[in-house]
Image (cartoon, rainbow, N blue to C red; front, side):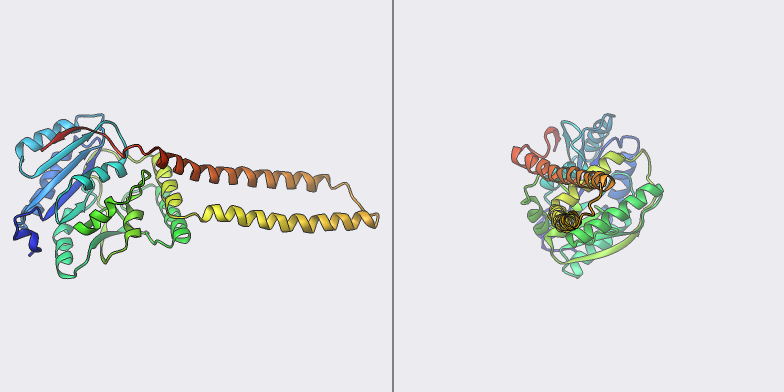
Length: 316
């Protein structure tokens, strides 16, 4: 069914799963996914990345690795670096001809894996991505926030990520190209879209979490959104320049009007106008400095050149 890697007895498929505080259900998640991939009768591996979980997730991973020593690789990060960094660690460790990225809560249906592999083989697609046709059980604020973020990102960068998820199959050449992107501020979905390559899509509905709670807080989601917007578009900086030009024209017109009324002896106090202008211009300046600060912070973090993550323990 699969490509030449199977003939050469190489790992064909790597399943990368970043996990954080998933101890209550990780064994069931692994068993469910393993049952699906095992039925395909191909060489595969699991790459489990513990993103500094505060619970006993690492103990569960070690137990699974003892039970399945030939198909599990695992690393534990020294602290919580975030899902994007954990995912990066998994991609660097994976050795398969294709790499499938999944979440550790079964909200990415394992039943799609055979179809993903079939499309990769039959259509010569380099990327098979699962697209959400519904977002499952989410708060209204989360749904509105996601729609707003993707709409803004599409307008600023021309990348349409509406419905996108991290549930993807990547060909080895795509993985190698992704790993060459050296930025520290990671946004996996956007970086994968930037790479291009031939891709096909599979729709899916997000099922309920099998257990635990989402590790994504409002603060983390906002931080990821800012990273995505600043990493893939410099348009906000150009908007500052545009706003400055608009206010310059407005100032010239207002100055000429003021001079005209002064010359004909109809000058007015204009106290309200001055106050309003100061408030508007002051607000614009503060917002502009904030936008510039975001980009400077991104540059500062990149220039430091710190590693994306640090591994404290390894298995296999």
